[in-house]
Image (cartoon, rainbow, N blue to C red; front, side, top):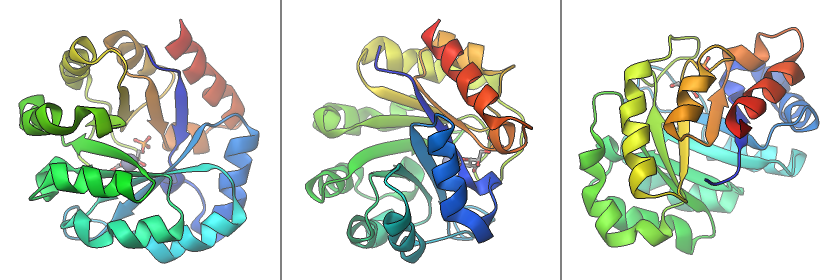
Length: 220
Ligand code: DX5
Ligand code: ZN
């Protein structure tokens, strides 16, 4: 099993104090800073793009784990690399040529991730697995419909996590949506090692307690 990674989602932070919130999360024990990029087209919500990542890059040394919920993700890969993103995760549903995109992300020095929405089976990733598994850093199994924080965890997505973990013992598996202290055990047992948590972390009086609790659940 790869190491435990806790990735607070800045979607639940205060966008007016993004750098402050990022650095605070790192100080409180976070490993990745999960940046939700939404285009108002692939998902019914709109957030940030590469210019914000570029500014943030100057303000934090934390790992910028960019989750692109956008149509045509290939359009943005160069901009995100130049901006200083560390990870670039895109949706299989949004890409015409995921294998080429994974290779491009890697060649630009970022770690590639591929995401599946709740309605998308793992079988949709077969070509990716067959052609570029060695280039792939992470599979993101969405545990809510992408677009908004604060939704309920879909436990039935854990079969997908189990399926990926059984086939690829070393790959990073991220779960995103509704993760909290009362849902993390199911994800950990299924084999996820990267936990995204927005409202559970930012809504807590002591975020460090939640970050630590999530880590303990993964390391059990
Ligand atoms: C949803 C985003 C998530 C979101 C998770 O589309 O991808 O990263 O911030 O928020 P919570 O943890 O509140 O479900
Ligand atoms: Zn996300």
